[in-house]
Image (cartoon, rainbow, N blue to C red; front, side, top):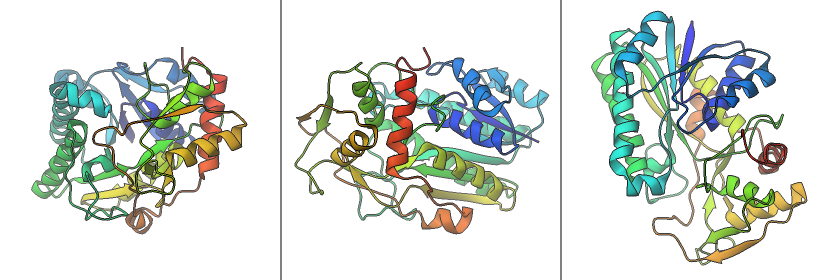
Length: 336
């Protein structure tokens, strides 16, 4: 049976598709290509030797979604599609609610109508908000402080309520921490449009000469070196977490929220130093004032992922920075 993958040509979605295809899973890729490129499909084929089965579609178009489900034997869904820029969500919240929430409602409604009961959702540690304690466990209260995080939290609530209302449903929300890295082949990686919002693609853009220097926002936090600490996870470890979640859904009913993280953090400057040491590339940086809403430090308790999914991270910070640079150095303009 077929796994429908929404947002399949995005950063995490494309790496999941590679992992799934290499393990013999049948995936149907769906994306509206608003923030990604068709060239991702060529990269997936080069890495896996399998030509991806792709449909260009938008979750906001429910009739189109219904047609896709009606003509394909879809067994389960892995849902990555959604806008993800925190700053943009604050300046244009309605766009985020329309795309991330309304699109997800369409997806859930069509799944129910078509009797497709298994879903893995791309959630985020952003749902936790300001840490009451570290590391975050799944029992930490949810209090997101930006519209992007709100859309993730709302989708989680809808999944939980749907599973309560209908015992046939089996759904997992995977709460990511900070995915970085790229496929080790260097053929597949993160390709943000415009100025990157996330740290690693900003570092690689500086390394390749597209940007002059890295801005480090705040060096006076109560951390090892004053810069913000985050839990970084290799995108290939993250992709494998989704494969494990699909296996879990095949044998369990109901709803679960599960952290996917390494269980420890690195500061901004520690990540920069690792990048420089592993790749022998200097990253100039300048200290800037703190950004409003940035947290000093947080990381995951991933015990539940190990217990329920049999999943732990396998790749190190050195693997992350090496593979990120392998991708960017071979593709200085990304997929274009």
